[in-house]
Image (cartoon, rainbow, N blue to C red):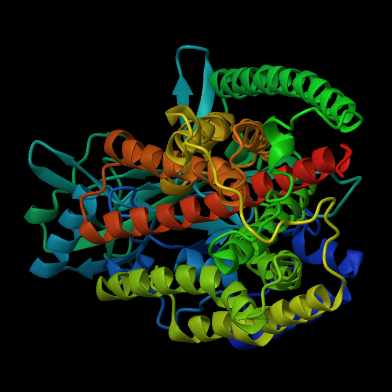
Length: 639
């Protein structure tokens, strides 16, 4: 993140996206651990407030799971300061559509307030329609106090526990009438420890909205006072169609809490964690584990027998070669469309390393949902700097296949995957921009992304390719014949289509349960924090992709079909098709998107996720199979 999480800074000026990109580059190159701790670790520098000191309440975007289109808080006729201060945002926050702004709420540390009226706003007919539209689409208001999001606490009667829901609704609709939530009861929790620090620390933030009709009465000096006499009645009262103005008010209640500052996020991060989640993850992992053990045992026993038989045959000149040894002169023959395969493998390795490092940093706390946008920003930077690895890997395989058009291969490595993602992102951004949503990324941020891509990633891809082509070709255990061997007719269950369809099921099964919770977090605006389990799922996924690709390739070679390069890649990569099909099922059963732009955003980004998943799983399957094929042909005696 670009803001050090230390003392308050109410007058900080936003940093331009271009400058932010270069600052992040400098920080990443320096790699100082202490600097990383100051910028990334949650809970490093808490803020202490003195009695009566102002605690700033900031407003964030309005969100809805029915549209997936965020809007600025002040698009609705709320009480707005004369000059709105916009908080400095990191690259991830901008891409996520966050818009953190100042407000008129006057909250003082450990000072309760009752029926504090901010303003009374006249509302026009168009603004009434806007309120009605937002209420119909179930938009949620998002506030922040000391970087804590406002939440509503709900009591579970089944187990006598509590759950938290981030944000609160703009209003409610009952019997065809629309009620605006114009009064909010703010409940703030603070922690005090005189032996450790001086002052108060905010450790909890709850907000309970209410639709309230205010009363007008005369004060002691004859002035008109707006009162909240009906506040105890929680029934919605303010029908938007029956009034021409809305008075906004709030209560503030401070409550002491034993929760320490470092644990204040626990209620948010554990709000959606249940026993079903843990049971499902463990169950799926156990199933995949036993399946992969069975495949490995069968494969190793069969292989050991084959190798022993082939080595015995090598001493007997009259013995005829059979099985996978028969194709030893063609097994490393250059595949069709070798450029595309080399590019896909390089991009897949780049994405795999980016994913692993992101998960490690997230599990360690350096990247956390506590810091808005930090995970997305970290992934972008890691992907940028992993470009050298993509160039190196694609160059090594392309040179092994004696490819000559290395410049085009390197260009495709640098532009194919990032270019596809950027084009989809750019087109979707145009649609979002047409809805005037705050989720539309500014063109200055687009330029910053292009700087990261063309200024850093592309040169690193060429640098990696330079070192890859400079090295000697990968040593192969057998020579390739000049004339390709004819492949016999294959049974239907060995065909490429059936192998891909059946092979992709197991990797998808390894991530199915976790995929549900990740998609729920993304599209239902929840926090995802189980990075330890996600790391375990990633390990299982890698093992599963490796074993299923090796197994399919072994049976293919046994049937004297030596065109295994693309098969080993597509067998695992086909699991991405199941991911996208599942996203369609998730859309039909779990989503309520009624706006066509929201549907475009959903399917556009799910296609990007599926494409990314295909490259990662395909690269894992190919690399594992390549090591396997080299090993088995290097272990037999060939004249």
